[in-house]
Amino acid sequence: MTLQVPAINDQDSAVEVAEQVFGQEFNETLVHQLVVRYLATARAGTKAQKNRSAVSGGGAKPWRQKGTGRARAGTMSSPIWRSGGVTFAAQPRSFAQKLNKKMFKVGIRSILSELLRQDRLVVSDEIIPATPKTKDLVAKLSNLDAKRILIVAGELTEDLVLASRNIPYVDVSTVEGLSPVALVAADKVIATTSALKLIEERLA
Image 1 (cartoon, rainbow, N blue to C red):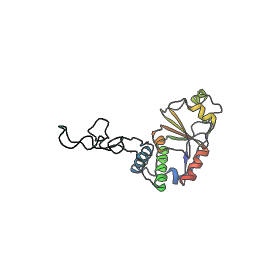
Image 2: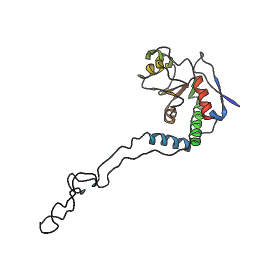
Image 3: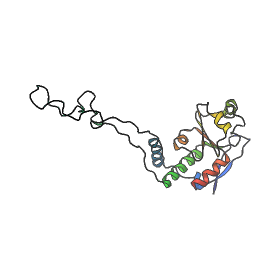
Image 4: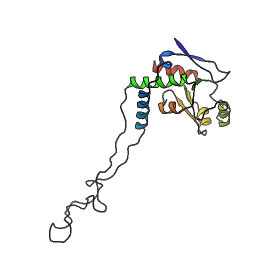
């Protein structure tokens, strides 16, 4: 059984797609896990502070233990001293979460299927601009009632990149770089015919 991705306008034609990829039930738990994993992996995790062993100095006892009238001290790198180490110093870490390939594929299929059911996924080859001018792409998108648009192309052309980079509500992506966050956030996802075929091949 096949499904149809509707065309964006009369110049394009609907494309038949496999129900295996675009007819899956929506798995909210898995999609949430997929989005959280993607956002967590994007975190730099480079925050770092020096603990008492990393700061300079502190090798010798500042003064003798008794008889000075001052509090006893064993090192100048103590956290209670000025320029001393941080008590619980932050260290670089990775926020990446594990998600196997099968779960990733099911999650992306679930998102695409829900987009199709909500009429947020359309197909158009005419959306790819023939010039690098932003106004040409804006004219093609003017009849869409969407605050955020994602264009998925089989291959990114220089004209598409240049025409879209100054439009704040438009994102472009290839099938290889498809982000679950961008898919969920988009009010309208416009895919080319070649992009849909590549998605089917990768997610089948």
